[in-house]
Length: 181
Image 1 (cartoon, helix red, strand yellow):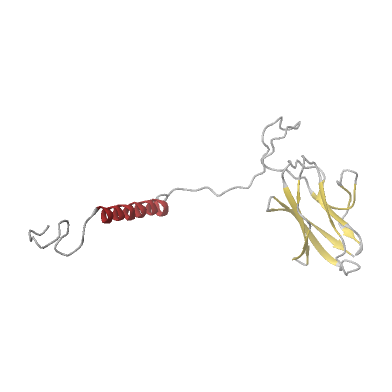
Image 2 (cartoon, rainbow, N blue to C red):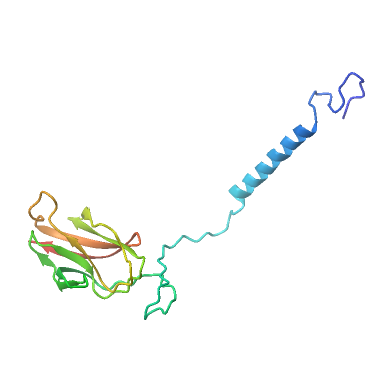
């Protein structure tokens, strides 16, 4: 309620707060900000949000997809091998190596679409010891191989049981166990 006292300035209440256009505008802005923040913080309560699933999309046509998007690579059996062929596919599958051997880890019959990111991790006695450099498939692949060699300063890999695991698009994939004599 406004005062009828002629000494009280027009547009103020007896408590002394002036209600001009600027004060009202600031109040409206503050109210709108609070409403907006409330919707941002509480607007989706109870709504189910699916977990994102990493995918690789390949739109380059090949005989398998005829231009449709390929969303997941299909890997064959992960193997260790003593060699690779001209295409870089592992050959001479074995699970026993000598300390100075190059150990190839990969797959020979997969469907790996262009754009797939991969690397291999080597474990010794269940402890990770080395990751290969990651690769990104620049075309559709049917095989891939990663090489592990004696590390710098070491002449041979230590004798014992090893495991190599493939990682595809950041996700852990299949692994293979082998022995170094």
